[in-house]
Amino acid sequence: MYDIKGNLKKVLADLPSGVRLVAVSKYHPDEFIQAAYDEGQRIFGESHEQELRKKVESLPKDIQWHFIGHLQSNKVKYIAPYITMIEAVDSFSLLCEIDKQAAKNKRIIDVLLELHIAEEETKYGFSPEACRQLFESGEWRQLQHIRICGLMMMASNIDNELQIRSEFRIAKHLFDEYKAHYFASEPSFCECSWGMSHDYHIAVQEGSTMVRIGTAIFGPRIY
Ligand SMILES: *Cc1c(COP(=O)(O)O)cnc(C)c1O
View 1 (cartoon, rainbow, N blue to C red):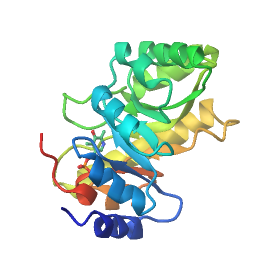
View 2 (view 1 turned 30 degrees about the vertical axis):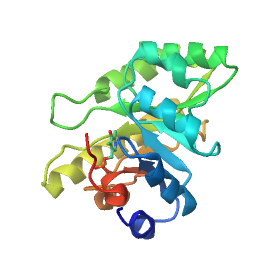
View 3 (view 1 turned 90 degrees about the vertical axis):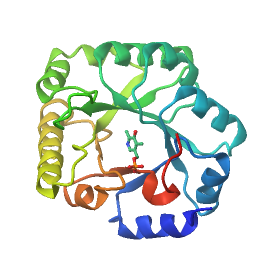
């Protein structure tokens, strides 16, 4: 098995204080998650509802699960009872569905809105302008069972460090803008979720508060 405990320690040592780690465990077996758990890790990220459901049943109950993938509206009801954070909300209708299912479960669910800044067309997420419009409309303020805690984004999957850095920087500027305009009195709007195995060193320099790291801890995924 991969030296998960050693890898985890190395990653944690790289993170400035105040930056939290989401250990991305998708496609990895329970034993891998348990190994990281035994080392003290409590936040894990998954991106498939059925896979997550099985893991929730068999793994320790105090794990905080973050849903980090694209979430279909019809799957929200399955994760609403227990999910700690939904990181990649990419439409207002999904936000409404999360609110509805959270209400049914008498919960308030923490969410991040996913920004699309990268060049790839395949990625989900709000354009900066669409995100601004959502906040400007104010309709989200009616949703009593969700709490918008910040933004999530993925930089372009490329080697060009300057390009990656500039995308993180754009995301941070947008976060600051939205914070000042729409969340000035809400300390809970505080999370910048960016940084993955290949770019988290850059992300933390550019204001990330939460990194989502899989491969650097658990090794390559076997699909
Ligand atoms: C899989 C995934 C990650 C982790 O990627 P690694 O390169 O393995 O660190 C991070 N964020 C999202 C949204 C993912 O889907």
